[in-house]
Length: 84
Image (cartoon, rainbow, N blue to C red; front, side):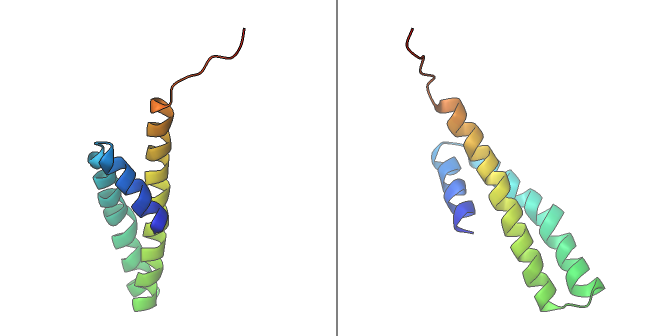
């Protein structure tokens, strides 16, 4: 969770709040809600299943935000030419 928070904050401070919002909404509707339903109700895990789904959502969110952050940092980093 701290990685997702740090990357989300980085994106927002670099005027890319849209990417953080899209990652959160996509994670909610594509991971958290369906997985909570499957684990909590279908497999009968109840609240434990919902917690497991939330952990999976946090991992997916952290991965998505890290990918976007790395892409942004790579595009902003000036290219340094070598000697010669």
